[in-house]
Image: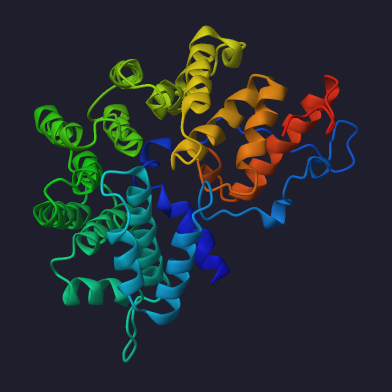
Length: 372
């Protein structure tokens, strides 16, 4: 079960939020144990590396409880009830749809189904068969197909196209079941990228999402994939999209952090510049993200995503005290960018955390001076 959870964490965001982040960016080598510059994160109450939770960026105990129940019993009803009780246009429902789809996909990978044995993820098939009009199950099924395409087939091949076409049809079915729900269209954003929708067709899809959830952060990140993809856009188009989203972000919206995600995507192209992490473009994007974090609701489901990315940039920019402030809020959970790009997200996070602690202490900081 532990292995399943680890794999699920890497998939929950990877198929919608990660396709364009696959290249490694700015890896920092870990300070060897016993090195004079090493510092002990435990002095700050931080969780030990082996206890870091890689399943998701922040806590969602209801989701974890339901996933455990569904996977133990292979009964989908708890999942259906949880989604039915989650706000349709909210970020949390989108994350939960991804989680259920990822769990079913991983089960299928682990148990493809031998003679006389039911394949993994059977509970999702039963869900669709027994409740064909359930909008939640239809959305999970569509997202499951998208994840299967990216995981099991090579983009551009007939197999990939066939699965994506099936996912496209599943998105349409899910949309018919819940006309006001943005999630089927958000799922289709990944289909649009995979099937290389023409720009006009993509923009029509995007307008449907804006009509239903104009400030949906997850949708904007999924759309950014399309604009960053070499077949559809460029760095300039992606930057323009992210900056426009930030400019129209209402007070308290995390959309103000979009430029930071765009900068992160293009680090390999610009990281040759000396002092890049103190440059104007990064500083401006970081300040926008910090403002968004300080203005957002404490229970915003996307808040942890922004904080994790801020840790990366703040450590790289040697802004130790600010990095420590973000770590206080996210420590314990590491299922987010940029850590999920690593084969060992917990270890990657621990490296940056240790560097933040060391830099903080080298500049006069201590557990006593860190605000909680």
